[in-house]
Image (cartoon, rainbow over all chains, first blue to last red; front, side, top):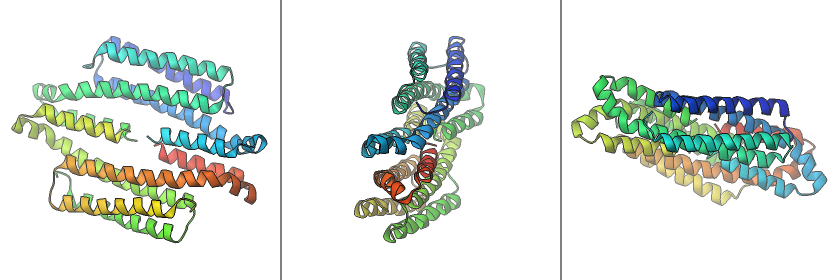
Length: 87
Length: 87
Length: 87
Length: 87
């Protein structure tokens, strides 16, 4: 992975902490809308981590593609990511 | 929460398990695109859990709104959820 | 439709005007990224129009549901909208 | 633009036709949910056109970046597109 490992780790661990909190909220039978909001906040953090990873990948992939001679394949990978991320 | 607690719990725990896997992938310096794909799979599970929760809420909220006499407030809450979920 | 017709019309006509502009950009063989950005701006306007319509619907649907005795059906419709809008 | 012009034109014109239809639906005071569904169908067509454009751009951008010596700038552009398209 080309992204800043410390930053990605921090985001992922925050998301995991929030997920533990949500499991507790479900256990305690908290209000649906509050749980839903927490879930969306967690998804937003994962989205940030994902963009961090993709951003770093893009900054390196052209160079990699050149060195490895597989630019087409790299662009197909990125397109597949765009397809999924924009659903 | 009005949703099926067993189902929501199962989805959230699957997501947490995947998140642990992703943290390990980061640790092992795995390929960016593979990590990104796993992250999006986890986001999709959280999205399923969220829709499960919102669905159950909608099925009950009209009735609740009647009993509590606050239909307007309930609809505002749902609109706020739609705003966030459709970003 | 329960939404402010003037506002919705204005948004839809702006989007249509932009769409005409995008067709011209394609004709003139403009830069991909510029066309893509214009397309996303147009999608954002349609999304605003859609939220305007859904918002007004929600503000009226509980009352309608009561009068028509079909709250369940209304909530199913809203859930279907949430499914599509959050894809 | 690097994308298949005929295909993109066809998608954009379909979207414009649908938009005209939606303006008529608003005029005729049709049911909110029906208008909302048509709007989302139109957004989906614009999204297809956008992906077509981005896909073609990606297939050419590495080559362009090499010839023009501005790979970094191209990747920044793509990242900006990903940011917007995944909102």
